[in-house]
Image 1 (tube, rainbow over the protein chains, first blue to last red):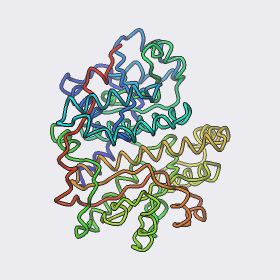
Image 2: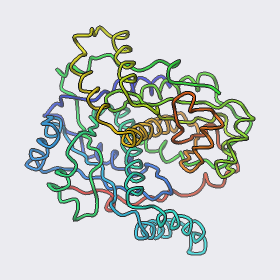
Image 3: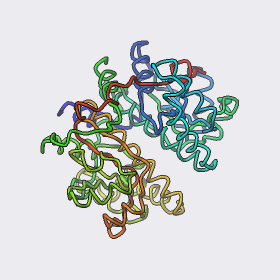
Length: 210
Length: 210
């Protein structure tokens, strides 16, 4: 158990990446599989994950993320996106996938499918956006915890110009929107932030028992 | 790395808990420390974590969570809450904590503190609520991944009557609100859901490379 706490203590929001060190294909695949395994409310997985591999695009994106060098210097740049439409199509896609990958037939799933359909019908577009963004945050931290255990660095960024990102990456055409970005790679040996002590409220402040 | 994927595959939203099996004090402490280590935007940690240990209260809460037995049967019931006020007080608390636990003096932190102050001043109350809830979701999935690795079961629940929960637990008096609840414990040996195959969209569906 101490290993888990050590890994969480080891990670930090990496400010300076080693531009020479790249993820292996195996590491990239483990990251993808761990993202896939993220649970979501009603199992709807209202997300897509975009790896930006084109260096010119990454250069263009940087200026819309306060010029932060992680956007271009990290081995990988992951954009966690929400689906723009949380609707019957998404529900149908999920249940088709369920029928393909399990023993379930239409009669087995209809009760649950009706409930989920009722849920998406009753979401207005603003609620749907907020709900989908929360799910994306589950994926974000799932992968950050997994990365810490793989001793791979990352730096989550909420503050970037998502409208510009969506334009540059033409995400509207794919019916998705960027929510949070995550440069992934390996810390530079001289990133002074890696030595900062973590500051967290103590247990007395954070926990209540009732 | 396969171990991580195995652990993520092992976990599932537990529907039926073993009422006899309880977390040890060591396990509870590891869970608290892992929650503490959760990162948050600007490090502000706009959350509190409530363990409901009073069985009568858990019985009262159950009916406001669709009567789901996990609320009363799991070893522990964790309520992940947001701070109601994301304001100068929270900023001050954080920076006081930083000065106490690091070498930093007022002159070292003033630039960053001004930026964070500017951020909270510019949040209206609805934005503050949404922002704080997103942070709570980071804590939720951090702890769920850690629990999977500890081979401890859990069942995240978004759909409960948070107004009633807040009333019963008198959370308004503590300036916090419930966001998501997490019964934690050990699966009952006859929980049939533990055998369900996971259904997740495949990599081609979820990932884009640009």
